[in-house]
Image (tube, rainbow, N blue to C red):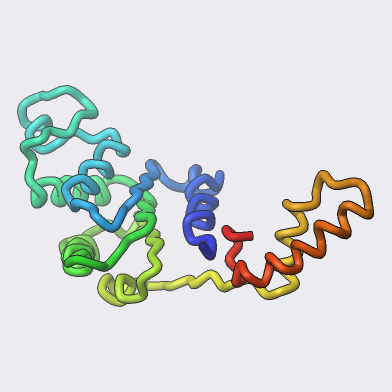
Length: 188
């Protein structure tokens, strides 16, 4: 679409970000997510053990299947108190009770804890999600205007066309295609 995931990936892979934080976590969320799976993913990407494994001396890096959601959340909070970590939640949806889960997640102990050295970046197409989690800052990528749309399209569509007459024919067709893309970089 507009480039939400692309912008987040650039931030996630930036060398300054890498050097500033101990860990980086990327969580791909879908319309049918389970909070337990997301919490496990955060812990696994951080190389953490589950609550049970920490107490029982289980294998490093594996998250036990018996840990419940509240134990996992507690472990994530503990992790964020100890480390600096950007966590990117990519493509959060707000349908089917999902808003309530995200509201609960972000209104748990996270805001009041010592997690200030960590940050969350969330991509969503649903403005209700940003309201529900009371986001500090919202960046809304805009659609490209006609000129920028044409430049982006031309850059990719015509880069290998050397012959002028052939290029002119492709430009004619391109000028019909570009307006139909509605300024969406991904469509161009």
